[in-house]
Image (tube, rainbow, N blue to C red):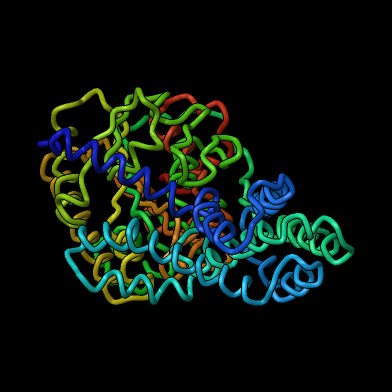
Length: 467
């Protein structure tokens, strides 16, 4: 498959890294808050102002930007105003300026690329509208971005006064208590029990094809017209009630958990930001493997892995997916020594971010993906590759309105997981709870390969005939 020209490849690589840098709250909150604080009275030469900024940011990190501390915004304002460091004018102006900066970054780094890839000029307005109702630690959630950015700006403006009065110390005590409460009560990653069969699979598969439909929630899967994939699920083995994703339920951490069988704190990819590397063993380290997907797949892959990148910006969403499947078919035919093919199909995730998880366009994208998978399966049958191949159809996370992360909604948390092919049990519904981390040891078992060193989870032997 022809790759994008080197310049296009490098530009898209840099653009995706910049997008994650600017839109994830771990880094964005400073871009939104610092200019507002400096413009509205922050004593930038006073170390106490910077100490207030650093302290507030540390508390936000402590609660992982979970939104419940923002419920105290009116109280925080009253305390900081009582301490003498924050006026009503400055507080409103700070929130407004943070909102303007948030919207500017959102439209430049999210809406514009999605508009180009979708070829639809209405996408920026759709994203703006949907960001009003979204709860996530990115600029696609206007309430969370402005709430944390505005609160950080308030802390910087109040600065010295917040450390010199009873009201100021009450503010810090309450903010710290809210952050600790949010951290202790926020949804956590479900860690599956470690469970491996006593004996190896009598006849290992020659290859496994893992098709990950990025952003497909169990709810959207059930609503969408996906006759081929649903037919496979009915004919073969499907996880009853869906598999559980990880927290944060973002693509890079979730996909890394599928590849390693480990939770984000273990494999090291805790969000989409700053190109965090996988720091433990993963499936491409234990078996010959190739990965396929858009640019973000390259970012969470190790440098020595074989990754084929398709361009959403150059080819559009569906055009990129057609090239992905063309490359996958070509490599299955030409590379008999590769035992694991992993494809991240990002059309639905891209469409959900652009139009909303609830939208007709999102359901249409699911149907388009179904057709691509159906055509690929038919090719595998015609070329007789299915005789010794297991196919796994999964998703890494769902979506809430246009974004995902917190696991506050079932549409973020539960995703479909299907096993199909020769030797797969017919008409089986696998009981839960099942985690996306269970995919890793199950793939190792199907291939007769050793298990990844830090993987947890169980081999889903129920998916196999006689299992």
